[in-house]
Length: 215
Image (cartoon, rainbow, N blue to C red; front, side):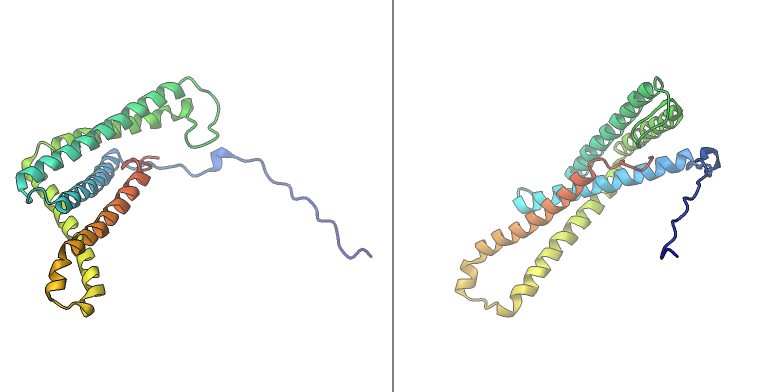
């Protein structure tokens, strides 16, 4: 008797696409709300980094009006990104409408995807519209800038606290300590600059604050 038996090949049923559960899309308003929220989060991160850089340079004190103007600039950049995403979706829809067959990967759009691409285009267009409305609201801009400023200060304060925790036990305030103050400030600025660059790299990795939220 053979010490093993040949395994019989299992017969699989042909794939039945119609048996897949129906994908229920999120409501249009909910998709817009999520997109605006993600854009605002990316905008506050960009504005926070800008405030940190300004603080390191020590060029001028924080001012509510200048901060609101900076917030308006950041929102304008987000509006442009949303508009570009809407235009890109329109172009993809136009190309997809001329393609038959099934997709081979998530960005291989065909005629069957035209409706979803049109929906995506409308979502991005509405996001751009709402962000534009927000950048015309002075009260909103001030609140937006204030939250970014508080986040910037939290990051700066965290770096300072870490530096103090490392050096406090050895601090002796004397003439030499005072003479080295400038060098310590430069080193602190280097620490803060590193934190800003790491945050910027994270922002670049995301590339698009709207990426992936509508498929």
